Image (cartoon, rainbow, N blue to C red; front, side, top):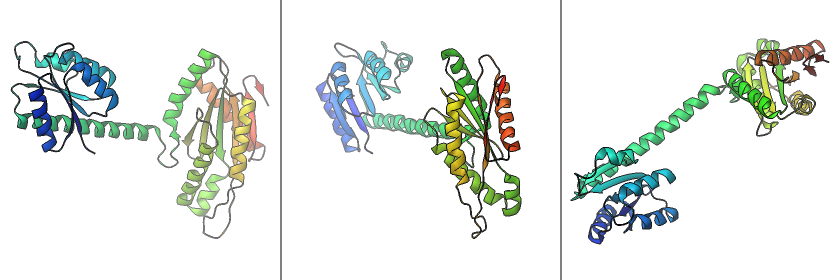
Length: 304
């Protein structure tokens, strides 16, 4: 992708010479005779770097830099022939990426421009790496659902939101029935394939504001904000039926089906997170005792 550079200087000769040189070394250039004109250009064009003189009539280069950094993610190099009046620190405090003195040596300007662009690329790569690391820290590597650590962080956030706005909050706890037997019979690699497929089924059944987590082993949790326990049943039953109808072929020939047991509960105002989760866990075990492949409610002070 070509790098687009905007030159801002009220001296036509300097402006034209800089544009000509930067075009020769491979940049796409635009020019403006004032800060006000440059701001108009920025609204119309995708610019990567602005090189601006400080001393201009009207808005000066430092004021321009301040305006650019407030509204755009663009690097700015400021230049001046009045080294005694403006300092490097002052330019940097406004958000400038570099500071050069007139008369400009074009080779030096090119080196500084390349350095600014290189630092921008390094920042992009660093931010991408941090985003990736952050995602890895909250994601289960196998199912690509959120992990249990993130579950507890999100749970506290959703509880706070529920208390603040008076919204309902439901929690589902799901456990794959007889999964240990499946792993013992066909091996953990085949078991992992089951977990991946079930994770996808769960994710496909959720709204955008819902969130699903691999809670541990063969257990999953689902947070359903703004949802009553009765309405959460529809989500749980859709997931249960889809998993019940899945066909697995762990040995390449034999068809195997699996089921899940689900517990549903609804947040009770002023209870702690641990009690909320424990009640969902108890509801799930009620489903196990009922013969598996079933759904059970357990509400605060109202078990069923």
